[in-house]
Length: 274
Length: 290
Image: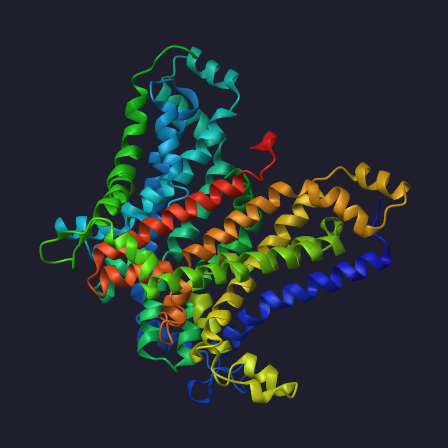
């Protein structure tokens, strides 16, 4: 059943209109980011000349170079840690039988629903008590804990549907659980693991409340935190704020365009599974 | 493999559980404990009983924060879902359109951009020379122009509309993919029976979309309740207290005004609300896939 000409036109009109609605504010930022700072009043306007220097100013004067490094360190650490711990736990919940596994899984799953507000206040005072506030660890460990709920859930589903005969064959060859897991199951599950890493990377990169609470030194601010700090200090520096915003959003947007199928299907599956 | 207990399994789950317990589980339980004390974050705390919880109802500032969250739910959840459903009825077979994947990518784009960036973007759209006022002046409604986020009567709605912008594409993508999963023979049968588009939507698409609608509701309602980044960047709760929300009150009381106990009570109420709302909406979910 093919779409009629009229139906196609209506579809394009409706989708085009809403795509425009989604994209106009984003185009506004891009234009603002290349508008000379003195001419920028926050309007939506095509600049008369391109001021690409705004990115350089944001990068140096706005300290976005340090903010981006901080975000990179935190995000990469959370992805690696979460994947390692999540693979181990997901495997146990999917393939091993032990007393209390149902209950423990249920408790972990609860983490999917918990907003950061539910734990951030005591967490701050606990970490301050042991001198861990204002360190990368105070961002990495809580965000790993937050991501683990999703990772364990995702990987357990993955490992559960993994064909048993392959696992058994590896076992007959004398492989132990840990080797079966890392040398057979993980490589074969590469696609869903990449999807998981991409989603966790996005959530971690974009997180705002945890860095806002934990970090006080400028050189440990993550990119979103750095942007609000910069905005708070230069309220009317529209060009530099826009340039900073583009810098902050760029890594995730680029990843999104490269891996859009994974992003969308991962998020939709994640939503549907909850 | 089944039936035999494997104690070694505890070694596999232990690292994840320890990180989870220390950095999330335990602090979560402590939030309850904190909520029964008055504490400024530095000196000794004093027992407060239920008074922090009484304040959530009695303190006008907290009450209005929860009221604002309710208002945001309309803009974050009801408006985008209704718009997306109407559009889905209109273009129910668009999932087969050539170029649909491009639209999907663009419609989904706001989801991947940090809320903080989205917020700074809308600050300039709502500013005195910003896009919204430009459009109003263009169509001769210049008298309505104002600094939308600085006006008591419009700031909350302005924040709500950012939520609408964020969520409408998500709902549309979700619903269109749901309709795409319906067997085409159902629609063909309906056509043979002489059903029009509206009847087709009500009889086939809408019931089949129950799962997607429930998912969209959960996601958008929870995001409305959790709103923090957007308020922090755009208004910090102002002007006055016209845009405070529970998550902002919890943050502000805990880390700025030295009312840690009260902040914890707000956080507990907010968390319980999120859990209850998710559980209620989950009951809409068709059972066989739940």
